[in-house]
Length: 51
Image (cartoon, rainbow, N blue to C red):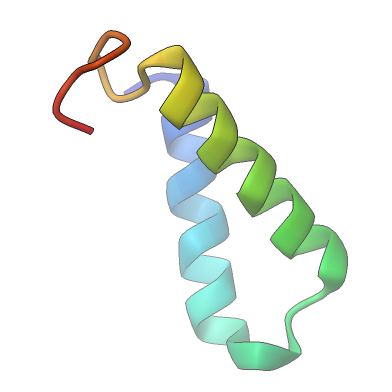
């Protein structure tokens, strides 16, 4: 996994453990990571992949 994928996994785990009371900054970082994955073909997939 690349750095972005690893960061996304860590953010998701932190969000789950923190529940709804997660820091807004964490949610912003999570959204940014998701956008990067969806537009940049994350997890090894290219644009238009199986993501």
